[in-house]
Length: 132
Image (cartoon, rainbow, N blue to C red; front, side, top):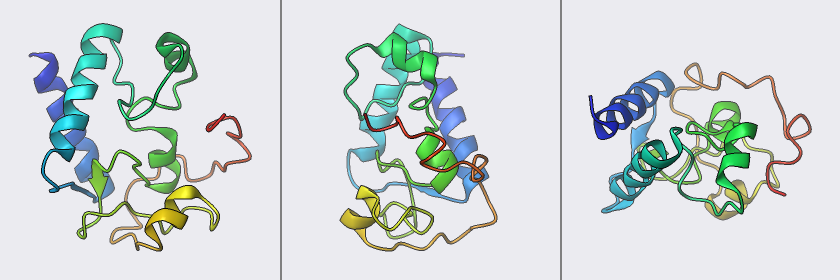
């Protein structure tokens, strides 16, 4: 099984598990998938390709930006726009009111609130260093 096959299977399984859709905006899904494949090949982990990391190996140790990232597992919010609602917008319903995603995209309801969010018991306070 190639790294591409692994990432495609991995993201499809997670998409189904969370009741989300892949973005249908041209180029979005492909760019994120290519970035995940590249990181899997070079770093051996699916590090989110949508962030800048001064030290990628240090980020891997923290685990917070491995796909699915902590924000996805807590809030079902994918800043990469790989996992989205039916309207091609990220799900923002579970985000804190002042979160940048909520401020940028408004309120986008979760069509399947019973699915996903394995870390829903966590909060920004628990993981306060995410955006530092």
